[in-house]
Length: 324
Image (cartoon, rainbow, N blue to C red; front, side):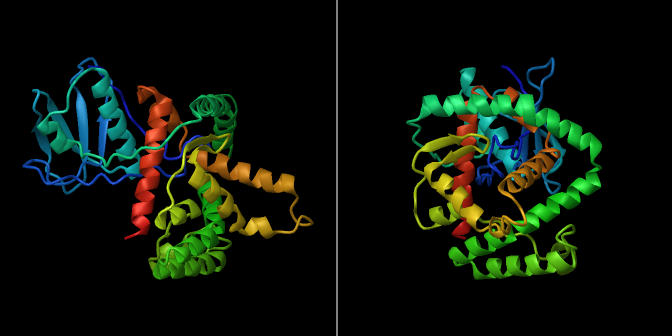
């Protein structure tokens, strides 16, 4: 059985959606030693093909967990993002299926079953070609530029810039939370925007979180449409922006109309300058995630299919969160 090492590109620049998340809560089967949901299954390349590591939250019981086909899986304390969880689970199952190994009852207790989510892909030839285009764009253009940028600009300064860009998206998050009738979340985003713009000096610091304990309330228009029952439509791979769908493509355009820079006069900022700002925002964001996309691609049996599945599960999860 082939073992592979998995790290998600939580939004590999322009090749994946900004956040890939999924609901991976552990069911309640009889697993005595696993007292908390797994946060990451990392398949590590090693001479021993049975060397698999399951990382659990700090509250989990450390030790060894015996699974049904005789492999001993070491458990370690760590934390991981939901993006890493979902990609790890997706690629682990894909690798198992490719090697003709059925998931046993004991394995099902370790690997939570995801709700089956599908999306039509009638434009597969075009989407696949666009996926390859974005892939080459990343390796031949974006990655080299980002590597130079990350070595030139100190990390602390890049974090401050990231906070400024994130603060500019606060009105979009506020409006979408309002559209979803999540009034408290919308109010929190309004407070964050005002407080961070002034106390955070243009948003360079997330003072609302540090001083007031108010966290970001993420929301977008594609999620808003899904909140009211609008389906995905069909799958799309957009140039530069990456995985999307008919619904989320419309949402992406709508979100741009909620961004403050859209309404800055052309006398102040030309169209080219606005595009340059957007490009810099993505390069700055990618500077914190160099290598994640490579790990995801190397781990995938079929990178195109894996990216599509990861995207659709993430978007479904976002819609479900909006209804809570």
